[in-house]
Length: 145
Ligand SMILES: [Zn+2]
Image 1 (cartoon, helix red, strand yellow):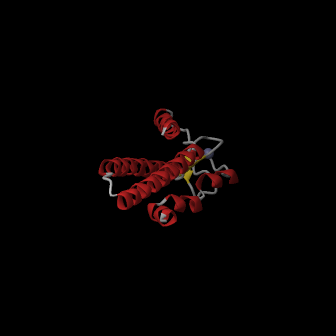
Image 2 (spheres, rainbow, N blue to C red; image 1 turned 180 degrees about the horizontal axis):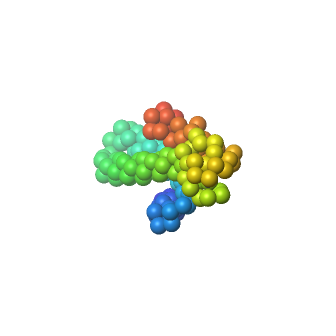
Image 3 (tube, rainbow, N blue to C red; image 1 turned 90 degrees about the vertical axis):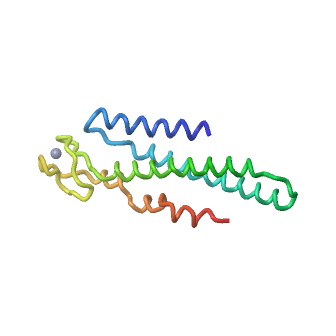
């Protein structure tokens, strides 16, 4: 949990920074890292939850409290994942012009303010293929066992 919290803190700090200093792009890679960590943590807790359910069924012991804690924790993590996913989406919407610093839509080829050609490197900020992996539906499909 410590690592997750650190990463989330970094993600939030990145977003705060953007709020304070207009003209700075959120570090999408940090958000992606946070997203990946959250998903693996959720996956891990699903596994534990499964084990608890199995133990309960086979030993007849009551693990209700453990289950409730796990479900609460997973719900919380899913909420965090949702907001990180949203931050990734938001940070991918705009492309910053290296010359004048103005923001352009992600599909723009030239800056709408100064006319500078927007660099190809910007494309890497928004590979929407990656984004698809962050959606909840895909996540659940991948993690059913
Ligand atoms: Zn420009």
